[in-house]
Image (tube, rainbow, N blue to C red; front, side, top):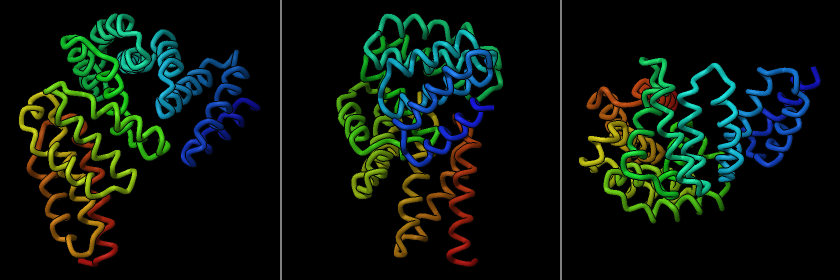
Length: 271
Protein backbone atom coordinates (compact mmCIF):
# COMPACT_ATOMS: atom_id res chain seq x y z
CA UNK A 1 0.00 0.00 0.00
CA UNK A 2 2.87 2.38 0.83
CA UNK A 3 4.46 1.60 -2.54
CA UNK A 4 1.25 2.37 -4.45
CA UNK A 5 0.84 5.64 -2.54
CA UNK A 6 4.44 6.56 -3.31
CA UNK A 7 3.94 5.80 -7.00
CA UNK A 8 0.77 7.95 -7.11
CA UNK A 9 2.65 10.87 -5.58
CA UNK A 10 5.40 10.48 -8.19
CA UNK A 11 2.86 10.42 -11.02
CA UNK A 12 1.39 13.72 -9.86
CA UNK A 13 4.79 15.39 -10.12
CA UNK A 14 5.45 14.50 -13.79
CA UNK A 15 2.70 16.57 -15.46
CA UNK A 16 3.76 19.52 -13.31
CA UNK A 17 7.27 19.27 -14.83
CA UNK A 18 8.91 18.48 -11.46
CA UNK A 19 10.93 15.83 -13.26
CA UNK A 20 13.87 15.53 -10.86
CA UNK A 21 11.52 15.23 -7.87
CA UNK A 22 9.49 12.65 -9.76
CA UNK A 23 12.64 10.67 -10.58
CA UNK A 24 13.70 10.56 -6.94
CA UNK A 25 10.20 9.49 -5.98
CA UNK A 26 10.05 6.72 -8.59
CA UNK A 27 13.47 5.42 -7.49
CA UNK A 28 12.20 5.26 -3.90
CA UNK A 29 9.05 3.45 -5.04
CA UNK A 30 11.18 1.00 -7.06
CA UNK A 31 13.18 0.08 -3.97
CA UNK A 32 10.04 -0.34 -1.88
CA UNK A 33 8.48 -2.58 -4.55
CA UNK A 34 11.13 -5.30 -4.35
CA UNK A 35 8.45 -8.01 -4.12
CA UNK A 36 5.88 -6.37 -6.44
CA UNK A 37 6.95 -6.98 -10.03
CA UNK A 38 4.11 -5.02 -11.66
CA UNK A 39 4.83 -1.90 -9.60
CA UNK A 40 8.53 -2.28 -10.35
CA UNK A 41 7.84 -2.29 -14.08
CA UNK A 42 5.61 0.77 -13.87
CA UNK A 43 8.36 2.58 -11.93
CA UNK A 44 11.02 1.51 -14.43
CA UNK A 45 8.88 2.79 -17.29
CA UNK A 46 8.41 6.17 -15.61
CA UNK A 47 12.12 6.38 -14.70
CA UNK A 48 12.98 5.67 -18.33
CA UNK A 49 10.67 8.39 -19.60
CA UNK A 50 11.69 10.97 -17.00
CA UNK A 51 15.34 10.20 -17.78
CA UNK A 52 14.73 10.72 -21.51
CA UNK A 53 13.10 14.08 -20.74
CA UNK A 54 16.17 14.99 -18.66
CA UNK A 55 18.48 13.64 -21.41
CA UNK A 56 20.00 11.25 -18.89
CA UNK A 57 20.33 8.56 -21.51
CA UNK A 58 22.31 5.99 -19.52
CA UNK A 59 19.67 5.77 -16.78
CA UNK A 60 16.97 5.68 -19.44
CA UNK A 61 18.44 2.79 -21.37
CA UNK A 62 19.13 0.76 -18.23
CA UNK A 63 15.48 1.12 -17.20
CA UNK A 64 14.18 0.13 -20.63
CA UNK A 65 16.70 -2.71 -20.84
CA UNK A 66 15.27 -4.21 -17.66
CA UNK A 67 11.77 -3.88 -19.10
CA UNK A 68 12.92 -5.52 -22.33
CA UNK A 69 14.25 -8.47 -20.36
CA UNK A 70 11.55 -8.74 -17.70
CA UNK A 71 8.27 -7.39 -19.03
CA UNK A 72 5.75 -9.40 -21.02
CA UNK A 73 4.39 -6.26 -22.71
CA UNK A 74 5.99 -5.21 -26.02
CA UNK A 75 9.59 -6.28 -25.61
CA UNK A 76 10.04 -5.01 -29.17
CA UNK A 77 9.12 -1.45 -28.16
CA UNK A 78 11.29 -1.59 -25.06
CA UNK A 79 14.19 -2.90 -27.15
CA UNK A 80 13.92 0.08 -29.49
CA UNK A 81 13.85 2.54 -26.58
CA UNK A 82 16.85 0.73 -25.09
CA UNK A 83 18.72 1.03 -28.39
CA UNK A 84 18.16 4.73 -29.05
CA UNK A 85 18.91 5.66 -25.43
CA UNK A 86 22.01 3.46 -25.38
CA UNK A 87 23.22 5.01 -28.63
CA UNK A 88 22.40 8.50 -27.33
CA UNK A 89 24.58 7.78 -24.29
CA UNK A 90 27.48 7.07 -26.66
CA UNK A 91 27.46 3.26 -26.63
CA UNK A 92 26.92 2.78 -30.37
CA UNK A 93 28.15 -0.82 -30.50
CA UNK A 94 25.71 -1.78 -27.77
CA UNK A 95 22.91 0.11 -29.52
CA UNK A 96 23.59 -1.65 -32.83
CA UNK A 97 23.31 -5.02 -31.12
CA UNK A 98 19.99 -4.05 -29.53
CA UNK A 99 18.61 -2.78 -32.86
CA UNK A 100 19.23 -6.26 -34.29
CA UNK A 101 17.11 -7.72 -31.46
CA UNK A 102 14.11 -5.49 -32.24
CA UNK A 103 13.08 -7.52 -35.29
CA UNK A 104 13.42 -10.80 -33.34
CA UNK A 105 11.09 -9.45 -30.64
CA UNK A 106 8.46 -8.24 -33.12
CA UNK A 107 5.44 -10.31 -32.04
CA UNK A 108 2.33 -8.21 -32.54
CA UNK A 109 2.33 -7.68 -36.30
CA UNK A 110 -0.69 -5.35 -36.30
CA UNK A 111 0.52 -3.22 -33.41
CA UNK A 112 1.28 0.34 -34.54
CA UNK A 113 3.96 0.95 -31.93
CA UNK A 114 5.84 -2.25 -32.68
CA UNK A 115 5.67 -1.60 -36.43
CA UNK A 116 7.19 1.83 -35.82
CA UNK A 117 9.91 0.38 -33.57
CA UNK A 118 10.90 -2.23 -36.15
CA UNK A 119 11.08 0.28 -39.01
CA UNK A 120 13.11 2.76 -36.99
CA UNK A 121 15.53 0.16 -35.64
CA UNK A 122 16.05 -1.32 -39.09
CA UNK A 123 16.70 2.12 -40.57
CA UNK A 124 19.23 3.07 -37.90
CA UNK A 125 21.00 -0.25 -38.24
CA UNK A 126 21.33 0.15 -42.02
CA UNK A 127 22.71 3.69 -42.00
CA UNK A 128 25.05 2.99 -39.07
CA UNK A 129 23.85 4.88 -36.01
CA UNK A 130 25.61 7.95 -34.70
CA UNK A 131 25.05 9.50 -31.30
CA UNK A 132 23.24 12.42 -32.95
CA UNK A 133 20.88 10.14 -34.89
CA UNK A 134 20.08 8.21 -31.71
CA UNK A 135 19.33 11.45 -29.86
CA UNK A 136 17.11 12.43 -32.78
CA UNK A 137 15.33 9.09 -32.25
CA UNK A 138 14.77 9.92 -28.59
CA UNK A 139 13.43 13.38 -29.42
CA UNK A 140 11.10 11.83 -32.00
CA UNK A 141 9.60 9.53 -29.37
CA UNK A 142 9.19 12.45 -26.96
CA UNK A 143 7.40 14.39 -29.70
CA UNK A 144 5.07 11.59 -30.74
CA UNK A 145 4.14 10.88 -27.11
CA UNK A 146 3.58 14.62 -26.50
CA UNK A 147 6.32 14.83 -23.85
CA UNK A 148 8.40 17.68 -25.31
CA UNK A 149 6.42 20.35 -23.39
CA UNK A 150 7.63 18.64 -20.18
CA UNK A 151 11.27 19.31 -21.10
CA UNK A 152 13.06 22.26 -19.55
CA UNK A 153 14.13 25.21 -21.68
CA UNK A 154 17.80 24.26 -21.24
CA UNK A 155 17.19 20.68 -22.40
CA UNK A 156 15.16 21.91 -25.39
CA UNK A 157 18.08 24.14 -26.33
CA UNK A 158 20.47 21.19 -26.23
CA UNK A 159 18.05 19.19 -28.40
CA UNK A 160 17.93 22.11 -30.84
CA UNK A 161 21.72 22.14 -31.10
CA UNK A 162 21.90 18.37 -31.68
CA UNK A 163 19.21 18.49 -34.38
CA UNK A 164 21.01 21.34 -36.16
CA UNK A 165 24.05 19.07 -36.47
CA UNK A 166 22.13 16.19 -38.12
CA UNK A 167 22.84 16.12 -41.87
CA UNK A 168 21.49 12.67 -42.83
CA UNK A 169 19.35 13.34 -45.94
CA UNK A 170 16.73 10.71 -45.06
CA UNK A 171 16.11 12.45 -41.72
CA UNK A 172 15.81 16.01 -43.05
CA UNK A 173 12.02 16.21 -42.83
CA UNK A 174 11.96 14.64 -39.38
CA UNK A 175 14.69 17.04 -38.24
CA UNK A 176 12.63 20.06 -39.31
CA UNK A 177 9.43 18.67 -37.76
CA UNK A 178 11.20 18.25 -34.41
CA UNK A 179 12.89 21.64 -34.66
CA UNK A 180 9.47 23.17 -35.29
CA UNK A 181 8.05 21.44 -32.21
CA UNK A 182 10.95 22.71 -30.08
CA UNK A 183 10.53 26.28 -31.38
CA UNK A 184 6.82 25.98 -30.58
CA UNK A 185 7.62 24.92 -27.00
CA UNK A 186 9.83 28.01 -26.70
CA UNK A 187 7.02 30.21 -28.01
CA UNK A 188 9.09 31.10 -31.07
CA UNK A 189 6.25 30.77 -33.58
CA UNK A 190 7.99 32.39 -36.55
CA UNK A 191 10.82 29.84 -36.56
CA UNK A 192 8.32 27.07 -35.77
CA UNK A 193 6.27 27.93 -38.88
CA UNK A 194 9.42 27.99 -41.00
CA UNK A 195 10.54 24.57 -39.73
CA UNK A 196 7.11 22.99 -40.17
CA UNK A 197 6.93 24.35 -43.72
CA UNK A 198 10.31 22.79 -44.53
CA UNK A 199 9.12 19.48 -43.05
CA UNK A 200 5.89 19.58 -45.07
CA UNK A 201 7.85 20.14 -48.31
CA UNK A 202 10.31 17.28 -47.78
CA UNK A 203 9.17 14.85 -50.49
CA UNK A 204 12.29 12.67 -50.21
CA UNK A 205 11.84 12.09 -46.51
CA UNK A 206 8.17 11.32 -47.06
CA UNK A 207 9.15 8.03 -48.67
CA UNK A 208 10.85 6.94 -45.44
CA UNK A 209 8.96 8.85 -42.73
CA UNK A 210 5.42 8.87 -44.08
CA UNK A 211 3.90 10.63 -41.09
CA UNK A 212 6.10 13.74 -41.32
CA UNK A 213 4.06 15.69 -43.87
CA UNK A 214 0.59 15.23 -42.31
CA UNK A 215 1.95 16.01 -38.85
CA UNK A 216 3.76 19.09 -40.16
CA UNK A 217 0.59 20.33 -41.89
CA UNK A 218 -1.34 19.73 -38.67
CA UNK A 219 1.21 21.67 -36.63
CA UNK A 220 1.03 24.60 -39.07
CA UNK A 221 -2.74 24.52 -38.84
CA UNK A 222 -2.65 24.67 -35.04
CA UNK A 223 -0.34 27.70 -35.04
CA UNK A 224 -2.51 29.56 -37.56
CA UNK A 225 -5.64 28.58 -35.66
CA UNK A 226 -4.35 30.49 -32.63
CA UNK A 227 -4.33 33.80 -34.53
CA UNK A 228 -7.73 35.46 -35.23
CA UNK A 229 -6.62 36.71 -38.64
CA UNK A 230 -5.53 33.23 -39.82
CA UNK A 231 -8.22 31.00 -38.29
CA UNK A 232 -9.66 30.13 -41.70
CA UNK A 233 -6.29 29.09 -43.11
CA UNK A 234 -5.55 27.10 -39.97
CA UNK A 235 -8.84 25.22 -40.23
CA UNK A 236 -8.14 24.47 -43.91
CA UNK A 237 -4.74 23.02 -43.05
CA UNK A 238 -6.22 20.81 -40.34
CA UNK A 239 -8.76 19.46 -42.81
CA UNK A 240 -5.97 18.96 -45.36
CA UNK A 241 -3.95 16.97 -42.82
CA UNK A 242 -7.02 14.84 -42.13
CA UNK A 243 -8.21 14.26 -45.69
CA UNK A 244 -5.17 14.41 -48.00
CA UNK A 245 -2.96 11.81 -46.30
CA UNK A 246 -3.52 8.16 -45.49
CA UNK A 247 -1.64 5.00 -44.57
CA UNK A 248 1.05 6.65 -42.45
CA UNK A 249 2.39 5.85 -38.98
CA UNK A 250 0.18 6.94 -36.09
CA UNK A 251 -2.61 8.09 -38.40
CA UNK A 252 -5.35 7.46 -35.83
CA UNK A 253 -3.38 9.38 -33.22
CA UNK A 254 -3.17 12.43 -35.48
CA UNK A 255 -6.87 12.22 -36.34
CA UNK A 256 -7.68 12.42 -32.62
CA UNK A 257 -5.53 15.54 -32.32
CA UNK A 258 -7.16 17.11 -35.38
CA UNK A 259 -10.64 16.34 -34.05
CA UNK A 260 -9.73 17.93 -30.72
CA UNK A 261 -8.35 21.07 -32.40
CA UNK A 262 -11.42 21.46 -34.60
CA UNK A 263 -13.72 20.84 -31.64
CA UNK A 264 -12.00 23.57 -29.62
CA UNK A 265 -12.45 25.93 -32.58
CA UNK A 266 -16.19 25.25 -32.66
CA UNK A 267 -16.40 26.11 -28.97
CA UNK A 268 -14.75 29.48 -29.61
CA UNK A 269 -16.45 30.20 -32.93
CA UNK A 270 -19.86 28.46 -33.07
CA UNK A 271 -20.57 27.03 -36.50
